[in-house]
Every structure is written in structure tokens, then in C-alpha cells.
Image (cartoon, rainbow, N blue to C red; front, side, top):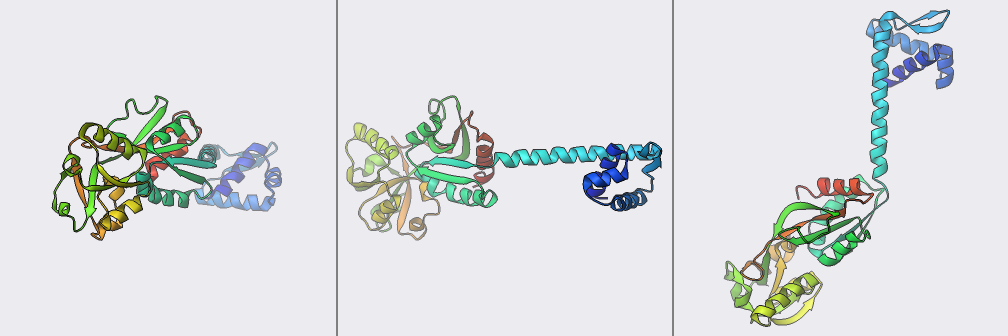
Length: 301
């Protein structure tokens, strides 16, 4: 039994004629007759009989034909559903992301996504946390990838949904391998403020440093850079020490080769966790695609 035979049966039922059915399906009458005969042999039941009223189902055939029509209906519904899903996954996916996610989660997720959906154009912009939220809020991008201070409350507008990656980050001090600090199990910023610092100069980190300096005095900052590779290279060469989130140190070659050492940072004002996730407008037309991207390509990382 195959779908071609079932389609022949359906057309014969609708036209009550094998010759008209053959014409409508652009095949020969003998092709339809032979195909149905083979199916009757397979079932062991005669499906049709010829009469003055045309080709009509036998009594036994009516039950089987009803099932055939049901199968074809379900097949059509399935085709429509697949077509609906496929048509939803077209166009463009605009993403704004903070650097820490761009450096770690996003490349792997994007590679898998592009393999499955090469027809979708993906554009990515790297920016600070606050700007990512604003871009999503103004519907300038479809998806934002951000880091939050422990909670979503009061951080994003109500019409914006947050999908957590179930990954939390902490802050670490990175020091050269030959630094006396390299043997520390944990450090507090207050105790190392006299050391020379090379600071990752994104607004997120600038705000944290400014908050610290208001309460505890100035840090010894040599320079700031928004290039994390410059920061890690400078630390490895002994220019100074720095502060990065644990997420930014995942699979890091400087850390894995032992050129820099990562030490957990404790105490005020950096003794909190970062919650990483994706945000999107609940009213966005690309919601189905966004959810698929977050659930299937970020989960399990």
C-alpha cells in the first residue's frame, strides 16, 4: 500500500469513474485499474464494482475506503502543519548580545542553528547590557542576550519575556601566573585595590568600579579597554591584574595554558551572581523562531 494508490481510490470515489479519475490525475485508466487491483489483492477485499451508476464501492470496500479517506485527510493536515512551521522560520533574526555571551554560548549555538536553517539571515550586534534591553524594548532587534543581577524584576519591561540559560556567573580576579596573588584561594577587591589594574571598559564593569570607588576609594587603574583579549594579554605579560565574569573565562586559552590564573572574588560590592539569558518582546512576529533558537540551541550548553 502506498499514498499513490490511496489517492487513486479517493479520486475514483469523488468521480465515480476510473476513466475520469485517470484524466484528472493525468495517468492512464489502466494504471489506476491495475493499482487498485493490486491493493485489493493485498487487502483480500474487492473495493469497487462497476454498475450503471459508475464505479462504486462494494459493501466491504466502504469500510476500508472510509479509513483510506481518513488517512489522506490526516496526511493533508500534516502537510499543512509542516508548511506552516516552515514558513515561520524564514526571514531574518536580529540579535543584540553582551560580550560575555557572544564569546561563549553564542558561536556554538549559532553554528548549529545556521546548519539547520541556512535560509535565515542572522545579524548580531555586540553592546552593553542596558543597550541590549533598550534595543529589544524598541523592537529594533528580535532577541537580546543579557546578564542580570540575580533577578529579572524591575530590570526589563512587562511586555518583554526572559528565558534563563540556568547558568549563573560570578566575578574572578585574573592575575599573571608568577604573581604572589596566584596562590590565593579567593580575594576581596578591597584588599588588592593598590595593585595595578587593567579594567575591561564596558559600561557594566565601569559602573561596578565606580560604585566600589565611591565606598572604598580609588583603584590603581593603568588603563581600560573594551577588548577582552587585550585585557587578558596585558595580564599575562604582567602589566596588571583585572576582573572578569566567570563566563568570560570559559574555555579561555590564556587560562588553560596557565599564562593567567583565575581567583574567585568575594566581598562587597561584587559578591553577587549574574543570571544569563535571552529576552524578547512577547508581541514580536518572530516569537516562535526565537523560542526555538533559545530552547533548542542554547539548552544543554
